[in-house]
Length: 316
Image (cartoon, rainbow, N blue to C red; front, side, top):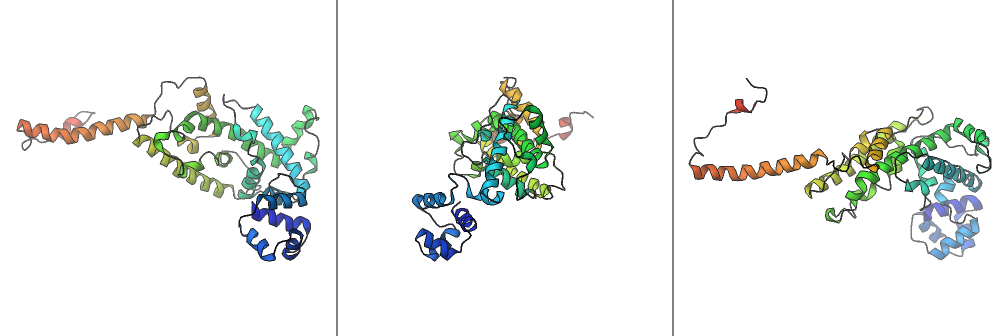
């Protein structure tokens, strides 16, 4: 974020690195170091933010939006859509990412838009510029004709369902101390849920030409992360009440239905088949170790021959 703050300062103040260094009373070399991500003190960051009049806003988001005025308008719209989507959730779970306590939602949405190839207009669309709190229902309905609004809102609706599935079936596994997943690739799963949610929407490839590449990349990451968690859980004999890879393979609606069933208590006695398979494999390994010893004690080890024909469940 520090390098984005410097980039934004150079843009807003329309100055060179040397001129910015003079304004901040530091050397031009220090500006270069900050541009490459070197540590910046909190006091210096506050000084620059005050100079730019951006408050606590994300400088990277402002840069993506084009300027401060546009970023404020986009941020207002994005949070309005998040509020609408969270209100319309049908899962029985609260979608905490939409509450945006970390104030990263707008940045995340614009990052996704850039990743899927959406060309964000440098000027905020005129048809979206009004007071959302004071507008009547007809006026609000009109904004959904805008293609950018459609993409953002669809991502949020998908996030409702993806986050609910995560909360229902995955969160408790990741937080299980016996699995010791802290500091591993499992740490990526929750922060990136909005990305996997975005892979599940329908989008016009003309508007988002890089959508397929984005989806493939995100799905691959999640398959790696979830498989790692699943293997850890099975090894530790921690029950799985659902196939957690469904987070990748199932549609947004299917994840919603599964999470809703869990929230209503329909799955209280269900254990994922992998746990049973693990029990079977453990038992088979024990038999393979014990059986030869028993056969030798009985004196039949050398003469025993396995008849595969009797193992055919279809008969002769």
